[in-house]
Length: 207
Image (tube, rainbow, N blue to C red; front, side, top):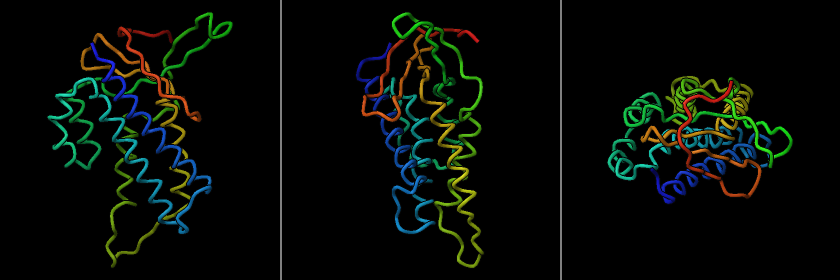
């Protein structure tokens, strides 16, 4: 079983994700800018890279000892594929599972919970997206022509933004204790706290 402190730490991670996606929104809509196109793209890219790493690392919140044990090794990893394999070795079911809740006659009457079938950022897509971030965030060889299409990157960022929000908006996080899940409500677009509730793991949700 997890403690309230563990759930607060996970909520903190998801709150940082929410903040970073808010920054992404502001730069994509051009409500915020550095004054230069490429640094704007790099700012957006950095936020996504942090978001992807938080998604991977946050699943360890329920085991503080493991977090402390792996942090020095995790900080040296920059390939998402290695990060994912490392975290997966500790918690094979670490990746968030997006769910829907459909109310029948209003929130007070209960409803149906089901898995989201598509439209969210998959594990493989997260690995690919994290890797692509390096194309912008690493300094290029000055003797090699740099070919950056701002429009293509903005389209890519729009897709990552939409799919990441779909993944996390309402999701379950499987703990290392396979009998326990956290159900998480992100509350995007509000100042309300991220809500994390501990539940007994449900083997199968309705399709």
